[in-house]
Length: 392
Image (tube, rainbow, N blue to C red; front, side):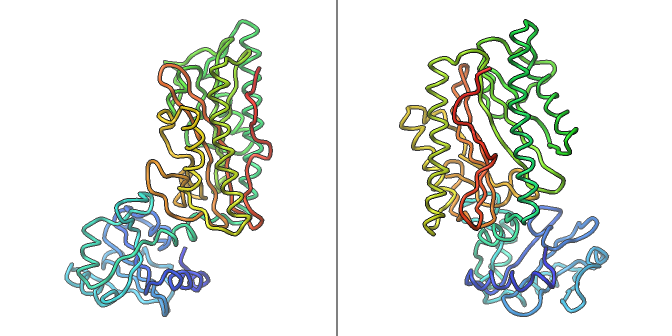
C-alpha cells in the first residue's frame, strides 16, 4: 500500500527502472494491483488514476461523486477532481506528457498477471505524450514479497499440511486393507476437517484423485462422482492451506496402495527428478549471486521430463507465484510454456515447484513443494520433501 512511510522505497524503485513515474489505473476492479496500492474504501465505479512521480508527491485523479473513498489520502498529497472526460484526459496529459511511465502492461501479454490496463487506456496515455513501460518488476517487489511474519506463518502451515497428507494416505491404505475402502470425496472432506481443526483454511479442494482421475491436473472429486481408493491404486493428493491473510502452503504428494507398478515408478522418477532439477538451478544461481528467471527454472524441469520421453504430457508451467493475497500470486511464475516469464526471482518472493506428467486415461503424477528466496539462498518447504513414493 502506498503511504508516507513507503513512498521513498517506491520512488527509489521507479528511479531504478529508469522511469519518471508509476501510473496506476483502475476501473471497477480491473486492476487489483492498483486497488491495493490506492487503499480505496467502499465502491469505486468511476475511472481513477494514481500518479507516483520519481520525485515529489503523488497525485490522484478522482471522480467528483466518489470522494469519500479517498478519506485516507494524506493531506499533503494532491487530489484532482474531475466530472467530464475532457477534464480527466487533460489532467492526465498534464502529469505524463513527455515522460517514461510505468504501468501494469506486459508487451505482447507475455506476463498476463501484470497485463491489467485496457488497450484503450494505453492509447489514451500514449496520446497524452507518454512512453509506457512495464511495471512488472515493481509488481514483484511491492506485491509479491513476503514479510518475516508471513514467512513464519507459511512454514507452520507447510509442516501441518504435509502431516495431514501422510495421515490421509495411511487412512486410505487402512480402509482398503480392511475391505471398506474410503472414497476420494470422503478423504477430501477429512482433510478439510483437519484444516478447520488446526486453524488453517482453503478456498476450495483439496484434490484427492486415484488412477486415471489424476491425469486431470485440476480434478476435484464430488459426492456424485467419486472413486473408491482400493488396493493397487495410485493416489495423488494436492492440498493447500493458509493461516489468515498469509501465504498459502501448496503441496502435492504421490503414493499407492500396495506395491507400485513399473510404469508408476518410471513416471514418478521423471517427475521427481524434474522438480529437483528446478530446485537445483534456482539454488545454484542464487548462491552464486547470479540472476535467475522464472522461465529458467521451468526450462530446467521441462528438459528432464522431455529426456524421459514424457514431454507432451507436461502441459502446465512448473510453478506459480504465491503471495499474501493469492495462492496464484502476482510475482514471478516458473513458466516458459504458458507465458514468457522474464521476471527475476528476487529476495522475498515465494512460488510453487510442481512439474507433472498427465497421460489421459492412464496415469497422472505430480510432485510439488514451495520455494522462497531468502537472504541465505533458496528455502524449500516443507522441511522434508518427497523422494520416494509413499507406499501404504
